[in-house]
Amino acid sequence: MKGYLGMARCSIMANIVYRAHFFFTLGGTILGITLQFFLWKAIYGDALLIKGMSFEDTFLWVALSSTIFTMFKTYVDWEMCYSIIEGSITQTLIKPTDYQLYMLSSRIGDLLLNTVIIALPTIVVLIAGFHAAIPIGINLLFFVLSLILSFLLSFTLEFIVGLISFRTNSIWGISTTKDVIIMVMSGAVVPLAFFPDWLRGVADVLPFRAMYDVPMRILLSENIGVMDYAKGLGFQILWITVLVVLSRIYFKQAIKVVTVNGG
Amino acid sequence: MMSDQEIFPVVVKDLTKKFRILNRREGLSGAFKDLFSRDYKTTTAVDGISFSLNEGEIVGFVGPNGAGKSTTIKMLTGVLEPTGGTVTVNGLVPFRNRAKNAKNIGVVFGQRTQLWWDLPVIESFKVLKEIYKVPDEQYEATMATFNELVNIRELYNKQVRTMSLGQRMLCDIVAAFLHNPKIIFLDEPTIGLDISVKTKIRTLILELNRLRKTTIILTTHDIADIEALCRRIVIIDKGRIIYDGDLARVSSIIGDFRTLRLTFDQVHVPDFIPALQKDLGEQFSAEGAVTVGEDEDGWISIIVQEDLVSMIDVLSHVSRNYPVKDIKIEEIRTEDVIRKIYEGALT
Image 1 (cartoon, rainbow over the protein chains, first blue to last red):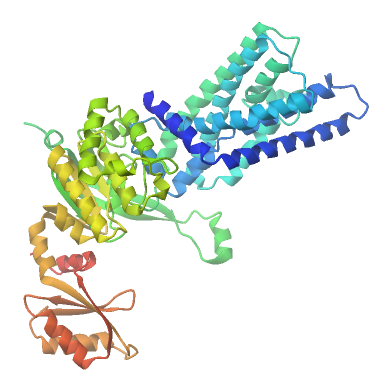
Image 2: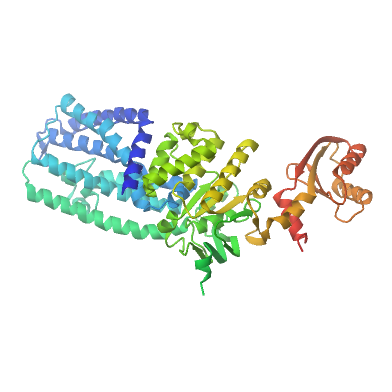
């Protein structure tokens, strides 16, 4: 355990070295949110409510979703793919550690700096600049819990995509496809309330909803209570368990095809 | 009776590794066809090798590029799964007990680093201490030893990516020894280093082996590494072991032969090499005294067996009769040692 914490500590320090990356991403995120503001403003026009959601609700939903998306972006799948292509994966495999936990702890630095340098300032901008009203109460506590679970879910999905890249030796295509599927099917780009019924049905049974829809609902819905929060968290835990088990079975398979080029 | 696995820290039997590689076609249209190609060929990187290591010995694995040295090491460290045969390291099957096996071994891949690229090297040492659960006192004592041997403390606060290759390699070797493993695998630890750093690294390896009784497997294609460190040498070529035994016997080849490398002003004469071979053969008539060959880089190499003919005689004959442009005299290369073994030099 101490070893993984040490890994996390190093990953934080190593990430600070590349601080410019974070400041540029912050700029990009705020720009993206501004675009979403005008896009949804145009969609709403004079309408007060669409699908039961006001402009303010919808904007806050998509703005927060894209902030969380940036926050969760640790590029672990890219890292795994490059480690296979250039063979540096051997350096991880010769350590007496669990590969998945090793990768997770090595991404903590990205997560933490994403949160401090990108997500928090963006939320300040949302509140101060766009006058977003975030309900404050017990929901915040559950939101943070749910967000941690969302991250684990997001990590596990990226990990699986990384494992697929062991076989394909390329990552751009699959990683981008995964991003698009997550963004759409999780209700991050367009809230699930806007989906046609059949698509809503599909989204409901897929794990992606657990990543954005659950924490966002906990944070923003005013008419649900602790029982609903618990149900949401349960849904997340269920999917994490399923995906972690799958990823570990798949890892045993994927690691066998490793040929480790060069050196 | 004790089994082999109990006596020897490393036991390898009939170890084989095959890779399946897609046959790539040429050009753009070939690349498109490759998209749907199922045309694989199988290459055998390691072809049924067997050996075992004694505790505390340093064994040199020598062979040309692509001989299968690194692949063997990757199977011993549990990174790759063998296609056939068996491996046990400290009684464990590496691929099946990768993490457990990793606790008892240290690995340095000369062309890579296990240090954090962006951080001062001391941070990497600290994390490795935690990952391998090295107790505080043992860590302090180990670092003190390293400091005595190579003054490692001077480098503590240097960012790894700003280090020279030699400094980085010293740190990587220190990192591999940090948890006091029973077996160390050094894959090309002196590759690309200058003589003074090579010497420093050899001293470090020898001292640590003496102090800790660590079993060390070293791969290299620098014969001088082997001469400085090992008593036992294993020569691998095309995935097979062609010699496993005392270095002294191989040294007799290494010592007797040297290579004279030359370039000439007029190299366009057809059959220049056979002609040169014939001329030298007549001049120095002892059998096998001189062997002429052409190297990939265009140089002509003349391997001279010095107990039969003196290098100076060959040199003066060649320079008197041929338009020599440039000259180098080198120790015999691994490839030539291997050729000599195939030609029966050890039998």
